[in-house]
Length: 253
Image 1 (cartoon, rainbow, N blue to C red):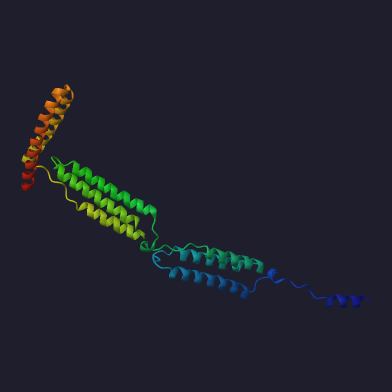
Image 2: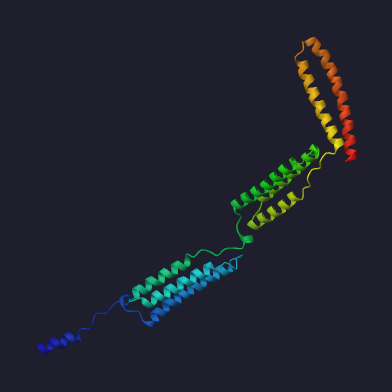
């Protein structure tokens, strides 16, 4: 009887251990490593095929390589297949979340901050030129205004071009061309002694006319009408003199 029981017990097979709880075989570990290597290579190829990838930007490839190396080490240390699966899945997800590599500036999408920066640089240079021109001793006011208008024109055109730029490289190009245009604007000329005397005479005439007008405004109405007629005649004469003087000035510039 006892022997029969022993024989019956021996015939009972050992329970089957599930695969996930078994110790990984060499083949199991290698298969997991191969899956990770495949994912890593695919991700690198995707990055390499992106248009405008900066060849100097190797951070993403290095990040993927580090993920692969850490995963391989952990796979070798896994005790059961369940751990093997978890390590492999974690590595695959980590590779998939690696950011895209840097693009060459010419392929980078326009950045509004870059546009604002370029506009600021251009405006600062333009304002600096205006200040420099205004500081010229005995500067010709007519020529000064012409050059100031030219500066404003260049800046306005630049801002319009910047608003239509599609890439950061275009922003760089517009900024460079605009700065070159600003620098090429000639400084306004200074008045010669003769011209300075004429300008002073014109200012004195304008001042005298304004002063006389103020005096007339304080007179009684009948007297004011008489003075107003005289002032009108005087202004006509002064305007003719000023016109002739300006023609002579332009002919000698």
